[in-house]
Amino acid sequence: MARSSIEWTEATWNPLTGCTKISPGCKHCYAERMALRLQAMGLEKYRNGFRLTLHPATLSEPLRWKKPRMIFVNSMSDLFHRDVPAAFIQQVFAVMAQAHWHTFQVLTKRAERLRELDALLEWPPNVWMGVSVERADYIERIDLLRETGAATKFLSCEPLLGPLPNLPLDGIDWVIVGGESGPGARPMDPAWVRDIRDQCLAAGVPFFFKQWGGPRKDRTGRLLDGRTWDEWPRRAVAPVAQDG
Image 1 (tube, helix red, strand yellow):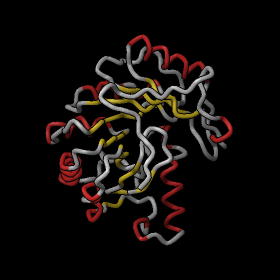
Image 2 (cartoon, one colour; image 1 turned 45 degrees about the vertical axis):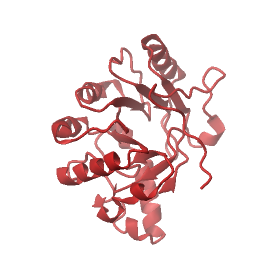
Image 3 (spheres, rainbow, N blue to C red; image 1 turned 135 degrees about the horizontal axis):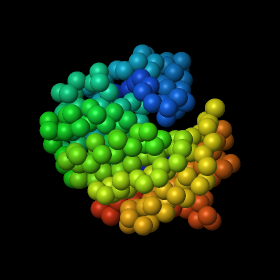
């Protein structure tokens, strides 16, 4: 288990690492930068750099973490990548169901494969399923998500690369918005953020504003109109700091 600095989770679990780019949100992938850095440091898990690699030995890790945590699954990959065998995805879901005291957050850009495999998956209530929607031409990912059996469904509009008017929020339990950060970060218009927030308020969907981003995200912060927006799905409570 790796503690996470991501504002909307507590820890990360990576039963696979590595990925390939499929849409504009992938252009400056933080996971790719991190994987190559860890490879250069000699970490065995990242011996293949950012090439997709399964790590079956890590599947049981959450079962050993006895204190309940909010866990982001595959921060360094995409569970629904086309080259991940369906049987391995089912194993990941079986572990999440067994580790019922944790909350697992799964996020994908590959909504088509998510929908394709939905019938093969058991959806325990402690698994939140999300899709990334960075621009309006990827709105169809939301409809595919809504067709799944996930009990809690969420959107990650990060990096937000354009306006997202008229989001189909029916059946969506949570929306995260954030700007791109790191080298080459593309700008985010505050009007895009406010519009999504206002859509969430009108629809009664919890809204979480993660960051403004930029090359130095620590300088831009995460205040929107003078306050933080740390709303959570109604089935959840905010993560608490871990002391062990």
